[in-house]
Image (cartoon, rainbow, N blue to C red; front, side, top):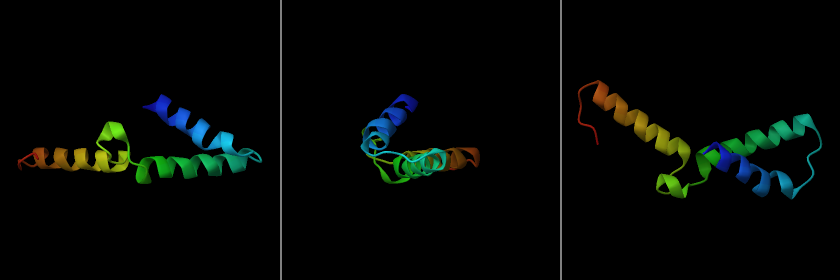
Length: 71
């Protein structure tokens, strides 16, 4: 997954325009990280975002931990 993240970051975001310097690069990477994790659906996650997939697993783990039915 990390290789896909960096490939997408490079080819769809960083290579599109000139980045002014270190601070500008940090801003661009953080913006992309937010978009990639919370807004962009992923085919490998059944068209969910990584955040939605993580929260679904976390919620399922809580139900199991407290003896509730796991769905």
